[in-house]
Length: 153
Image (cartoon, rainbow, N blue to C red; front, side):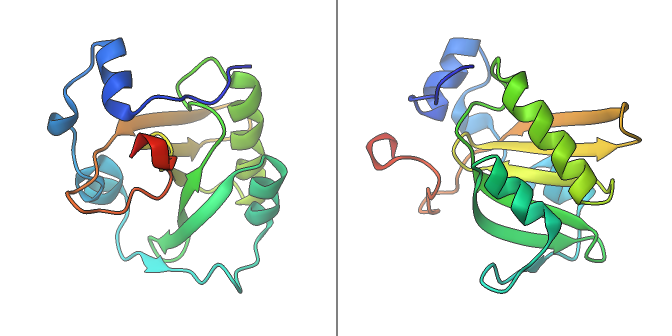
């Protein structure tokens, strides 16, 4: 299993030959927020209880914020995870995604992985057929960089 990624987003982009960080969309401009979800509302994490919370705790996902969108059936989890969601970590992410599918009743969901500036959208047809879409985003000037270690800010 791959260890935590210890380099900033711009370094990852350079390594993979991707676009420059300044060319990435802001979080609000990603496909998730411009095409997939609407009518999102904040959830109070102090009082929120749902089976997905136990799944996140089981997989050591740090939940920082939660929004419910599309009539309260599409959750957007703002999280920090211990591994790179696009790295060689199938043994971590596939069980997490499958457990989230079950806990969320098979409904689509998304993760905003603040530790990697990555949006991961999951859509489930059934237990064996589902899609995972990834999109990098950049922070707006002055926007909180909550998920990244202080040394990488």
